[in-house]
Image (cartoon, rainbow, N blue to C red; front, side, top):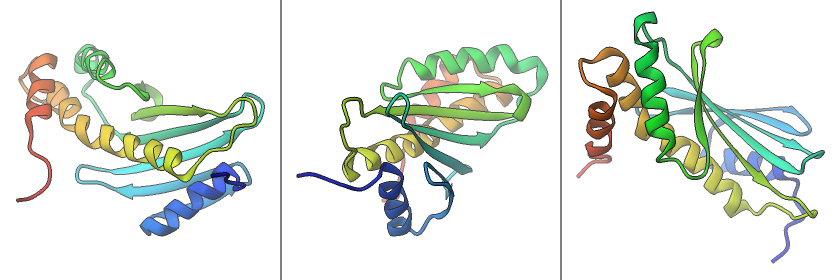
Length: 159
């Protein structure tokens, strides 16, 4: 099946279907907001024609105490070992945690709605899954490994 939609058009259609707040910032960029269980996440997706990559950046605020920065970097490394389709990074100047991923469409490949949907889902799921670990490592009395174990062991959803 062939799709003739621009990748950002696909993202816009998905945002409309999900009733997410979004703003088409430019022809090649869209910004969205998603209210999760733990935080509100800002998601920006941009198309870079030069390297033919659809880039996703999902951010959420996080304000670690200055003396807990080493713990934040330790938990960040542990979490990134568990993320296969993207990675987290800490933007200290803005006090935001960032999940980044990309979809390379080299060779004039066209993105499918399913591929874009997987990118969005991964960003939200990873952010929701690991936010408690970041919080526990920064504010709790647990080590980074303990914080990660507790966060992963949590039950999601309702019975």
